[in-house]
Image (cartoon, rainbow, N blue to C red):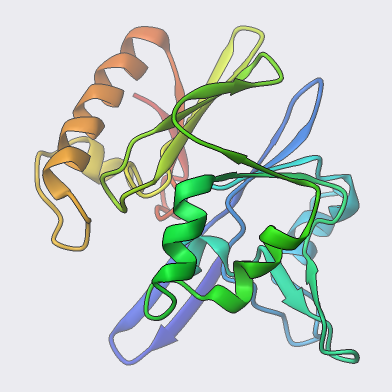
Length: 219
């Protein structure tokens, strides 16, 4: 978990690691903060749980808002150059979200964190809906931002759903409301109901990025 506190602002987030027979999959990349020892918090959390950050093989990005993509890259404290936080991983990013983020650098997007994605060959830009390696489904949803996407990982009998900021908290799945911070709040509400019903029917495990009290659940 990474937190940023300041006045009335507190952001609680939790990128997820999903380990399958094929991959070490990171779902979104956090804020990119360092701990008091100068180590990237995300790297330290992985190490604390026995995972070498260099073993991450896929990074799946729901969207590129700074609280999800601040950890895509880091600035080397000595050289000042940017590097990908997980250099051995393949990053999967929506093509139109990438362009939208660069065009709207500022409050929600930070171009300096993500511009490197255009410069590396281990980045796959996707569009619309599709399947990665036969078992990871991605779906373009919009809603929270114009080119947001969600992921469903089918690992054997297990189905793991990551809804990013379309489905960020369990409480939002259980109530019908339109959030003012969403690009299209009505669509987000409709998607949450759709995924809730489908997840119940198919026994999905939901991962909630902004819910540190209930980070995952079957509905």
